[in-house]
Length: 175
Ligand SMILES: NC(=O)c1ccc[n+]([C@@H]2O[C@H](COP(=O)([O-])OP(=O)(O)OC[C@H]3O[C@@H](n4cnc5c(N)ncnc54)[C@H](OP(=O)(O)O)[C@@H]3O)[C@@H](O)[C@H]2O)c1
Image (cartoon, rainbow, N blue to C red; front, top):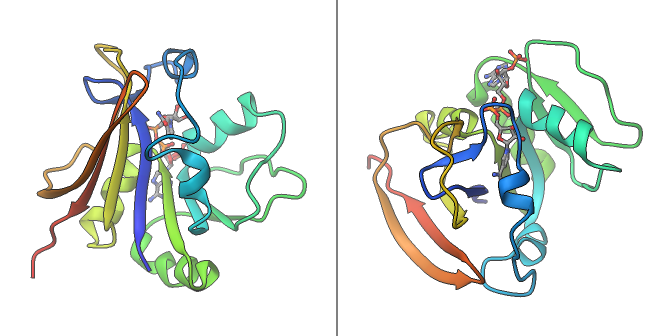
């Protein structure tokens, strides 16, 4: 089982503006059948994990909950529940919840959807294995950071998808 952080980023390392806008990303052209595209990635995923802001963005911006996999939302608050979604709310240590997430994923992988600090919490615990980033041809200057941690990575794959630079890395863990 592999835990992936798969996300898009501005070239200067932000995954959303300070106001949680993704307009800079959604206005870009991306080939969904091209390299490192989402439709192929999601087929390997058995469980999702996200932070409260990412969940709230999905509630605000998506017409319907599109995920069939169980999804864990890390939050300290009581957030609205989407009808029909397989949601579990959690808080505190990602290590304590990881066993449940891995069990739910079965023989598939785990996707840390975002944000960057939550992916960092998995990395802190030695539980983040791979990082996939589609870098959009945009700089934002400020916003929510891609992955605010000090990590060493091995580049596994790099590709161009329309205007995006797509990079796939493995997290090098202390042996
Ligand atoms: N570019 C992309 O492809 C992409 C991908 C994913 C997300 N995004 C966007 O990026 C932004 C990310 O927002 P963000 O940086 O604020 O990160 P986030 O992880 O989505 O949300 C952070 C919040 O999650 C809760 N949280 C995180 N860890 C927790 C823990 N261990 N225990 C309990 N609660 C915890 C806290 O909320 P509370 O304490 O308030 O509950 C925290 O303030 C969003 O706008 C999202 O839509 C972009």
